[in-house]
Image 1 (cartoon, rainbow, N blue to C red):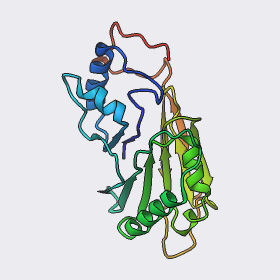
Image 2: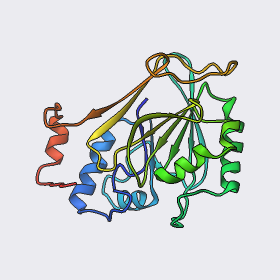
Image 3: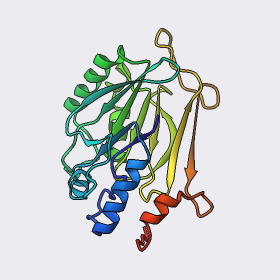
Image 4: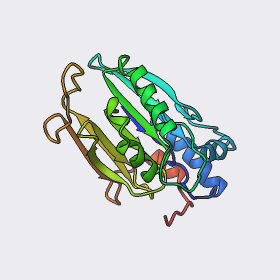
Length: 225
């Protein structure tokens, strides 16, 4: 599956860029055939002004949403979008929000072979949820984080029940997760690198093969970020 989190099109603190760049990005991402994409509210507004509109499969989710996907091996992947949090300058989430999130995880756990959370909260709020005592009642299998804060290639948290991956804020890289063995929910399953899961960062360097159609759209567009 190809999944995209918030802030693929704008930096968390960034302002809308030139129209030419916005229009090129909207077209390019429509070629990439993402299975699921999650936008920030700023990105949704930004892309909606493009002649191409918002690429297929991408959407802003203000509230908790659950989506299911069947993959080639017959397994079901469940994706939970985290709700928008107004920036209150705090690095912590409330006990009430933690309880609400865990309640949703419990509700949807039985509907999927693997449960993936997608968050726009930023590093510290995500960490606050992962360290909350309520979280261990029903942890996610994978948390794909985005927003302010550092990137993570992959870190095992919550007693190795959750793989936490965060995109790098300036882009130019793709996170890859290989699930070698799916979680067995009838046992005390834990992730182990190299045994049942693997993750890496694929850097998009100058020697990365370029698609001529995409390259054409980027002519005359500079980006120093």
